[in-house]
Length: 175
Image (cartoon, rainbow, N blue to C red; front, side):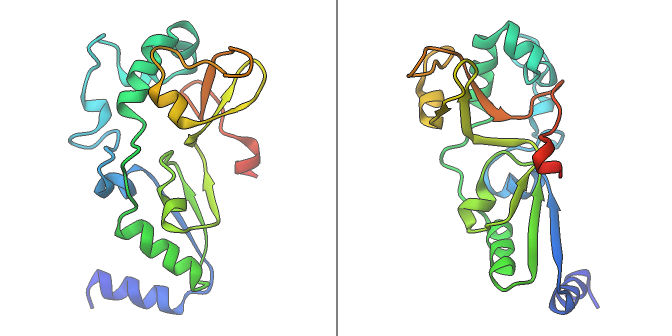
C-alpha cells in the first residue's frame, strides 16, 4: 500500500480531523515559503537587512516606510488563488470530516477555498487596523498607499493584523 493509499484510508475512517499547516500549503498558489529553496529568507533585501528583522515589531515601529516597502512587495499576494490542497481541505470540512484548520499562513486562501473553521495563528494580511483609533482598514488601501498607510478616519498609522517577530500570538486564537 502506498503512502497516498494509506492516507486515503485514514481519512475515510476518521471522524475528527484537524489540519495543522504552514507556508508549504500555499507555495502551489505562487506564494513563497520562508525557508525553502526560493523562500523569502534565502534573499536579502536591498537594504541588507534580513527579512526576520524587517518583519519584527521593533523594525515596524522604527522604520515603518521600509517595513511597508518590503511587506507590500513580499507578503501581499492579491492574485493568489486557492490550490488543490486548500480546496480538498474545504471539501473535507463540508463533508464533516475536517473539524478545523490551524494555520500559520497569513494569506486567507483557506477561507477563499471555502473553509469556515480556520484558526490563523499568525493573523492575516486581509485585516488591518489603525494603531490610533482601532478602525479596520481595507487591504487595498495598504497595498496602494505610497509609503506608510494612514487611517482615513484619524490619520493614524495602519498595522497589518499579522503577528510580527517580537510579538505574542493572539491569545483568543490559542484558546
